[in-house]
Image 1 (cartoon, rainbow, N blue to C red):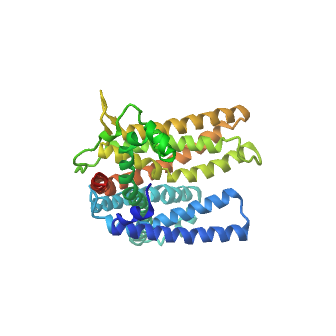
Image 2: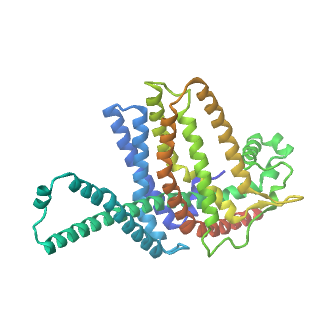
Image 3: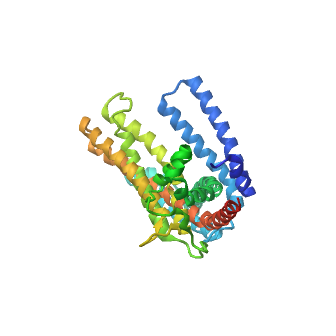
Length: 392
């Protein structure tokens, strides 16, 4: 059993500080949510949205501390990333000024008469030209600054989420791997007769990782050196793809769920549930990205013909469970109610625009700043635990 003491004692100081800050902010925001619920009597959907908003705010603040600790650990340097942010801010600012300012301004002057146009200028071409330049420069600086700050805040949010996730993984993954290596020993018939509680705990662990009973988990192996020097773009694409899959299933499951409380018209009900579901999906990286540490470690159990990889087992079990459950609800819902197809399509399209940006940024931060050191620390800690078990 993984105890809080064993979990906490083997974390880095930086992990402990990140978790302390996250916990303190969580308690504060949860208190505000409870007070707001009692005072305003909001609907369950409003309570959930407020809670998720507070959670996002918590990660954003925690991100400041995580950024301070880990900004120098990236495979791709932080300086390069900030320069890219600045370039994107400049490009987007120019596009925004052209679309939202210059084009409407030109249309406006095309629609009014010449006398009104003359009143907008001084008559001196140099002054009018300089005035236009100053106006463009002012708008450009303002928009560029706002866009860059927005990018950076989003960056901090990703740092906070992944800093929190990495701390949890560093504390529990070595213990989980040790338990996996002991599955065969603790799921024997003898163990079932002598200690059924331990037996069923390890049976559950075997089921979660989809490990065949014919495999001897004592043959658990890892890559000798999990550290990499080139950024793993392939893993990023794979992780974003799975986040897309899971977010879609969750959206369908919640927004088309016939067992949830039905109020109002079908369109209003769908949009309300879709809003709740889309908010929930933004924490999906916290559940998908932990798979990939097993891929980085190349953790596998030696088999008679080929090795079984824990990454594949955990991934297949999660997908099988969610797909089966979500598909059943989808079929039932579509059978009992028709949703306006345009509302359905437009909701998903609008959602995916922001979702992909969020998923890419957060996934990039995890693989760039955290996974390298996390993989190394997990192997070191696992070896310490394994050696300690052997001496017992």
